[in-house]
Length: 170
Image 1 (cartoon, one colour):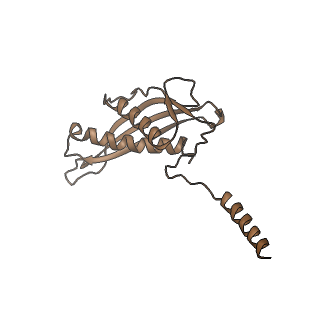
Image 2 (cartoon, rainbow, N blue to C red):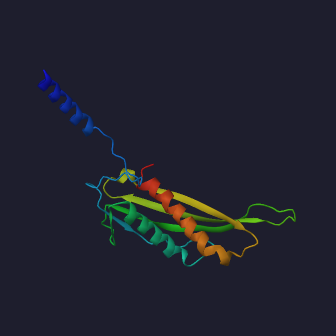
């Protein structure tokens, strides 16, 4: 009987270990047997207000995130398994908090991006979405003094939102 019990316990352990869910800490839910490549189109600025470095900053942030958090290879052609393209549609300032002197004490910088996510392996998973992120700053500061840092923070937030909505399958 001890030998039979050992065999049964071993079989149960092998069965249980085969059913352990797989978790990834980066949030990606990509089947790397199907998806190997991704390409990016330009994200031109189509906003009324323009901050010229924003396009390159955003594109680089997206590519860096994909390279760091997935095993997808970034390629320069449209024949990739996945593709992202779109445009920066909004770059705006809005007053937020009004001080006792009736002037805004806080200003919000909002960046909006339209993203077309194209899944060439399964077109039903493709999407066309708009994402926005913002940061508030003191109205006593000039936008030109805080713009670089704000844009860095906002593009990080946008990249996270886009990643989770497309490759993260949230």
